[in-house]
Image 1: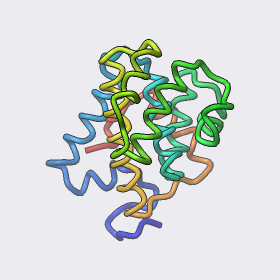
Image 2: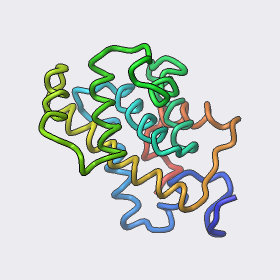
Image 3: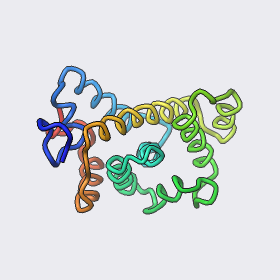
Image 4: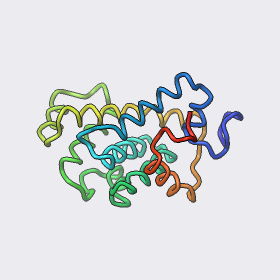
Length: 178
């Protein structure tokens, strides 16, 4: 049950953002454009970054929902948990690992980001568009993780797949949102 009585028990972040439509709508529109708009990152890669960031923050609600969404876009089941546990031993492409190492440092130690960290992303073959999207998704999901945790939202295990399916098909601006 959420910590705030005005938020429905089965709510996601949109239930919170619905309470503040002027700013909430802007956040959801930004989320839609960032995760579904044009990008040199695939939709699956963007959802992977969202779920990975959430996993680093131990936000179970967002990790579960966005892992399911990433899987709906072709990310291998269990990969995100493996990456959160240990990027180095996870089975995925090295360029993805490099990008996620950057996201991890940006999430856990943002003041320690250096030019060398940024250069590693570009040396791995990513362009400025991918860099922008990775940084923006990381920042946005650090926000969402705090919002979800501050309001006490929980995701029942039986709804994990439904959330992933809904976000994959409907995006972030469906009729259930602001």
